[in-house]
Image (cartoon, rainbow, N blue to C red; front, top):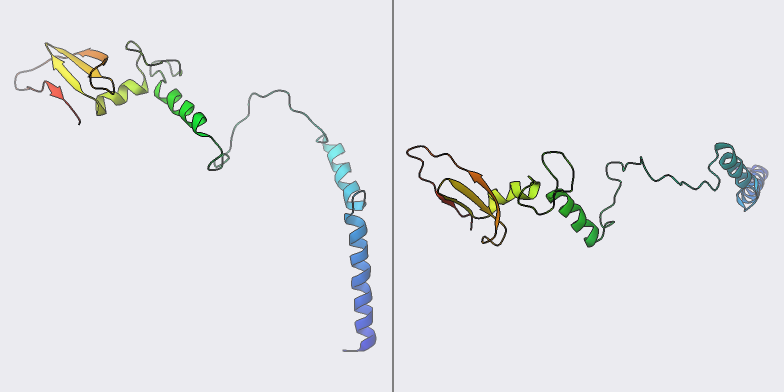
Length: 147
């Protein structure tokens, strides 16, 4: 390669590098362009006051972002969700149909005595809710205990 040509290339590289350093410094050309964009789009120092109507994208909450207490609150709200109206104000009640009560019959003690089915709470001793049972001949199930 020609020495004069190499010197020319190196001089051009140095000139470009010097220009980039000027452009990228605080208050330089690039900084001024970004400031102009922020001012033009109205995003410079905007403070959002209304905190309603937002949504979280799929994958928007990274793993580990929620602490244990928040996760427990979410789980409890799901379990206490009322099935009749779709609200989460059911609580641990014996009169409102909730997700918690629906799951109890699948895992807790269920007893049928004198035409009444009783689904127990998680201690298998405290009644959660009851239901009337109609029996037919040949259907002798009287107790379900998923231990």
